[in-house]
Length: 425
Image (cartoon, rainbow, N blue to C red):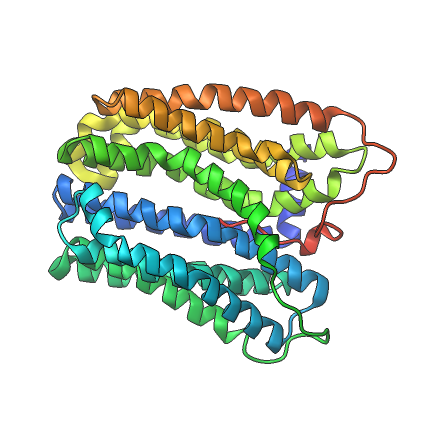
């Protein structure tokens, strides 16, 4: 057995396998959802749907930090009914003002994304609120080592989205597909809440601190903006048909990051624990290989047969996007390296977690300058990736290659890698 295979076996033994399987099913369900909806809607409507779905994910991704903070809280203090109640109540209260702002800004979102109705933009508000509470609930369960329940929330949410979203898209179009996505989050919350009702721990009650969420949220948000800004800007700058093709190509390409994101959830605690040790360089290399390997493999498959992938998923309507899929798949695969290095910086609480934010700003600036075609936008995304990856590799890689200082300490929450929170998938 190779060293990489042994690392995968250890990750599975520590509970990563259920999450990885659930994320793989969720990714397949996401592709199936886009495939069917992409065939049912015209390219212009599908482009609008893709833009709003990306905005939903963008709003939810910063809240993935809640999962990390809630899991670390339970790992340290234990899970009780009061802890769960206080945490979920706090998260709901924190999320209400942003949700109201999104609701008030729905007309602006409708105009920016060229949506057909106000209802399509307004559904971002309930999604934000429910997604925040779901993230916190999953974190509480992960801290209590209820990994199987967390995996079940992903599976139930996937089934609910396929069933309701595809049923509602027939009579209601884009609004129906979005309603199914919101309903999927509600279904996941019901599954999680069912395991948080009774007493589950012997420790005293404690609450989730907003400051503990902010640091991880900054890193996760920067990564998401860096990997998704091109899709949102493509919808704004390109025509209906061109934006539909870009959404289809980007959806296929960015799916190669889904499974590595699940594996990253298991690798991050190991990086956290390894940072003050002499083996931290090996931990980064091994964990990085575990995360980037599936991304590179998936990217190579898409690059090899982009036309076939598009035809199977979307039919013949997007056959001209094969070259675009190939380019975006390569960008997505290499972005997995930025993901690993950013989590390495997060593990040692470094300011280098701001580098993806800089990369996102560069990407937006390039696209705002050159956006005459889908090819130009993809090229701008690749141009922003190159310096971002280079800076992270040189600066963060050098820090992990050095020997640890004698007085180095494990950063907060990393004392027990098997119980540290997983980042959002």
